[in-house]
Length: 477
Image 1 (spheres, rainbow, N blue to C red):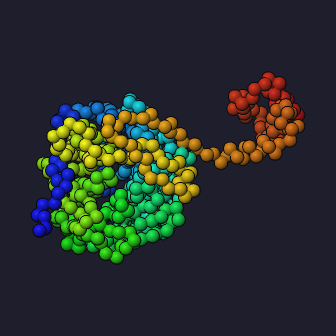
Image 2: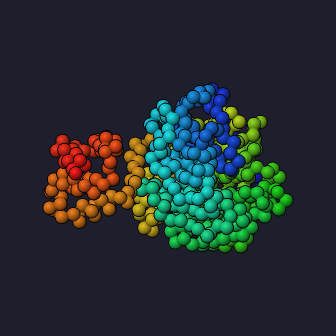
Image 3: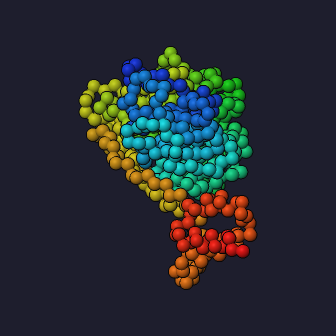
């Protein structure tokens, strides 16, 4: 006999908002129309894009700093246009990247204990897009590799350590890119575009290896993410404006593995995926609910689990990495829901009677240590995430020192010039060369301008004898 109820350890997952004193109140959440999550979280900080006059800004709050946030609380405010997307680096909990309407990506290093004064100077500015930048995504396993996608329909992959654009993917997308996501080891990316196509791309070979046109028939924005087994999950709309969830195999994109239809709301569905448990959480912008599904390799592949509902609609959503959860309370996910004026954490828990560590809920998860350096990945190497156990809870490790090496093209020229100069020139006194320079300039100097001329030169002249020589040259008849 066929089972009526499918067995799953996540069937009874329930969501619960935290108490009011643990929320972050009086925050002016950004009103940008771009469909990003507007929030990103890690085990140390929560960052939220906020309204700002005369540019773009986002708040960075230590997790423990709940309650009412002062209007004068310092922000990260270096962008000249509204901030559209932010994301924490998975390998350093103090590094965050932001994309903005000012066509730049900026990388910031947040102090250990949070901001004390407004931060306007990034550690790196990545310039290469010609239109606004709406997507930033860190590489999951390689250190200092960042992807950005803009409304100029191109994707750029950066080496953040040197602020260089290493790979530029042009002419692959004929319209605005809605989403871009790395796979588990960062060897491929999947994108969704306004032309309704989903593409799987090998960024280092700069080739499209799989493509599905009209993955969803509707005109509203789509999202696409990679699952741990290599399949692609997409959210979008049908021709009748019903919201859909679809599963695809990149080796055969002709037809979806399964399509799950939900409702007729017009909010874009933001998918958040837990690779350890194969659970996908769907948060619709403007919805007041979070749906979650379990993905398996048996038909019907996508299994509806439950829905967390609340009264207030969500403006955006942040998703805590697994290492930031409380394993003692069987917490399997934590969301940071943005309201009009506050951020409310929502805890997803699996009810268990035992106080022991639940191995089945917490398999080894991706830790903060990168598997590769940026140069190794650009050279063609791949590395799976370095896993850590959460048995005794996550103990933060000391972050690696974050360095940005800004290459100056003038350095090489200065070196060449110094090498080409002869030993005689290098050892000679500077006085004759200065004298010869001013001898050449003498015809331009009149008796009326000589005072002003000498006043401007004085700060760069070091020896009295040189000044005397210059006077002689100027006033010689």
